[in-house]
Each structure stands twice: as structure tokens, then as C-alpha cells.
Amino acid sequence: MKSCVSCQGQNPDEARFCSQCGATFPAAEAEPAARAAASEEEHWRAFIGQNADRYLEQFRKFSEGATPRFALTWHWPAFLFDPFLWFLYRKMYLYALIYAIGPVVSAYFTGDITVGIVWRIIAAGSANYLYYWHVKEHVAELRKAAGFDQARLERSLHEEGGVQPYVIWVGVALHLLLLALILAAIKEGPPEKGKLPLERGERAAVRLFVASAS
Image 1 (cartoon, rainbow, N blue to C red):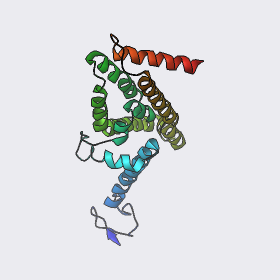
Image 2: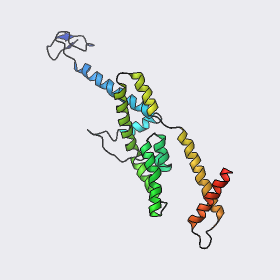
Image 3: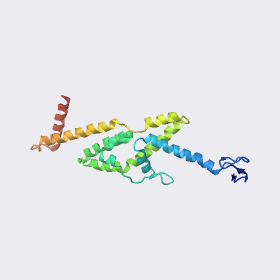
């Protein structure tokens, strides 16, 4: 038996409300909140899909305080592979566009192709944090839109979240193309007198394109 803090009435241990005054027992108040927190984490897990446990572990670093804040983490896939492909893989289309255009524009204006490494470092240091906000905002929107329709919510989480499997093959094709361009440039030999290496590379790229189209 347990007593009510309001009227001191005796109630069974499993009681959620006082049988005499109707007051709610503290454990009964905490239970819905705990269920809601567990349910929200499951929604995040369903939205993330692959490697959900690893990402949730990283996300806890951003939500340790009262409000979310940035914490430096490292994301190897965004560094080792093209950041554009990783953001596209995780359906973060705006960031994919930024990382598709940004390195090219930077290399064009600076004349230094190694500037792409800087973009990779930025992506690796911020990818987890950007993905955290992507998941947080989208899950909140989907929960609000679905209301009490759990079937609709689960369907939306899987459709809007997860990954784009085809991006893996796009990455393979792009890296094979890059390898072919490098081999073509090597085969072309050293630059001719009065010709810049860029011109030689352009000729090699044109030859490769013509050969693939024929």
C-alpha cells in the first residue's frame, strides 16, 4: 500500500491515482514523459535508418545542455569520400548543392585545386551537427503533420528519412571517371612547349568523352 501525499489516503501499490481525492501519484506523472522520450528516440532511429546507434551517440554531444549547441566531432565518410555524395546520400539536398558548387567555384577563383581538401575538413567537422539538426527538424515536422496517426508517421519517417542507395553507384562511377581522366593525362605525357598542363588535361578529357560516346 502507498499513501497519497495530498490526503494521506491508502491506495494499492499499482494505483496511478488516489481513490479518495483523485490526486496523481508522481510515478504516474513521470511515466507518460518517459514513454514520450522513448517514443521520440524511436522516431529518430526510424528516420536515420542505417547506423542509427552511432549517429544518436554523436547527437547526444549536441544536446547535453539545456539547449542544443555545437560540439566538434569528426565524420570520416564526409572526409574520405566526396562531401557532396554523403549529403546527397543522407537526403540533405541543400548541403549537397553547396558542396557540389563550392569547391569548384573556390578552385576556379583561387587557381588551386587543393582547396577541395579545406572543404572536406569543414564537412568532416560539421557533418554530424548538420545532420543532427536535419533529423531534429524533420522528425518534429513529421510528428506534427501526422498527429495521432501512427501508421502515417511511421510511413513518413521511412520515406523522408533513410538514405539514397543509388548514390553509392554514382560515387563509384564518378571515381572511375576521375581515375580514367588521370590515366589519360598520364598517357598524354609531359606538357608540350608553349602549352599549359590545363590545356593538355582538357584535350585528354575531350578524347575520353569522344571515345566513350563512340
